[in-house]
Length: 269
Figure 1 (tube, rainbow, N blue to C red):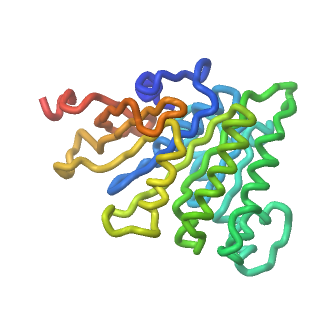
Figure 2: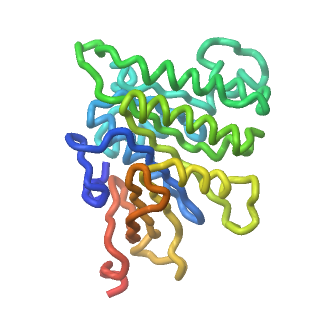
């Protein structure tokens, strides 16, 4: 969890907005650190977290979580975290060796054109399980995290099917259960020539979300002390355009990140 980012977003584990859909995207940069931030943030907040890890293993997220001060293994043991490990479970689905309940969410790997109904049923089941933990703990509002949604495009799932999936998830998690969603998508470098790919997906999700965080490399190229810039858009409920936009430079550290307004870093002063 990054305290400076919490300050920018005006949120803390003890006080944060509910019913938010946060879209994280990147181009010529890696926005994964924002997924790790939100994962540790919502675990600290005591939320019930459903995490669809489609591109990395549980051990990867666990190792990063340890550096940020949270134990994913402990959270999963207590029932606070439900983790779908796409990489591990996909092999059995593709080879048709495993038909267990755990792999049913990945049925789209066999028939991509059939849509993502199985994956949504898995999410719906997870976010509704909000009973007491083993130690008598009661979890807060549900949170859905996905890393990264755009990988489904390379598996043959259409943009329309993915947007339908996110709309159903938003209706369930954000509207019905008053929880939050955080989804990462990666954009292609050529933004003008992508009628069916990740850029189209990102544009569709921008219209659904309440908050958009877009990470990209510096326009001026590599800098040792500034690793990239993050655009932040806030949108008021019911509006069709973003009502506020700010751009920050950032520098990543082993156990965190620093954010500062453009032009205020010591590297450019």
